[in-house]
Length: 64
Image (tube, rainbow, N blue to C red; front, side, top):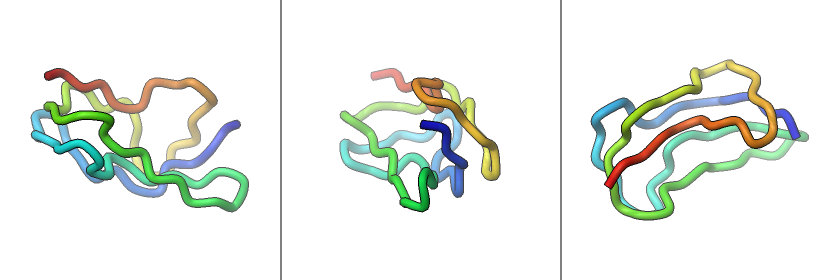
């Protein structure tokens, strides 16, 4: 389902921990927090605040 990015909490190069919120989006009037699945480093950020994104679109790329 398409949604709108409400906030991006990380930048390229940030080191994140498992469970840390990477970005928040809204879809169908629900707030969804996208969290890190494991510890790592943010390699790329493809989403910006206010952007509308589609289902299965890559929003953030991580590296170990």
